[in-house]
Length: 214
Image 1 (cartoon, rainbow, N blue to C red):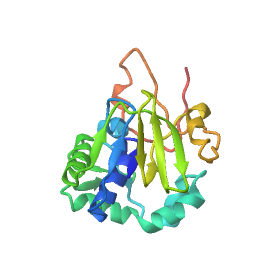
Image 2 (cartoon, rainbow, N blue to C red):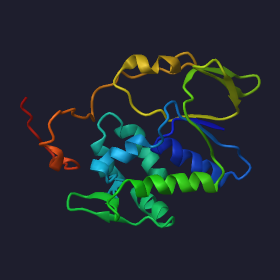
Image 3 (cartoon, rainbow, N blue to C red):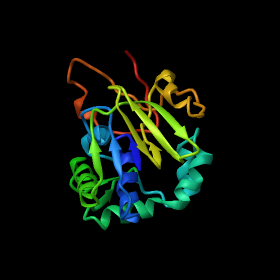
């Protein structure tokens, strides 16, 4: 089994697949040299793991474009189960006034260490600098052949794509060949690159409405 993407979704998928299927050989392919990079910077470096909302009908309202699709996902694995999953692995979460939940350590490294330790514990193989550029499904053999940008090929019987978001529609073209259709991406979360450091104290703050003037 191969998971494309070494982010939070890819790692969470990999460790749970390996845990629930001890005979499975699970491999993560990450195109860059860095693992869990977005986890490291999320929540201003503290990692807002989840939100204290135990009513799935209310929770999905925060995802206007994915509300319908997320109903079944949250029914299978809810906020309560997320808290329990990390708690069972020694990671305690705390709730702040606005409902966001962070590790009590206030550092994203706690979450990163947890996922890396789980991957190691369940013998998940991790390969960095492996950029998949083509997927060839073989219905007869019931497997997939993945072509990397260095010309190498790897084969697997199960494949999960967890490559995360990208603002450019062209970034998903390699997924169209196997038969997928792509919804046009729109901005939802982005960063500011500011030369001066006057706004660093605002890192990690979240407000319902904001007005920005440049």
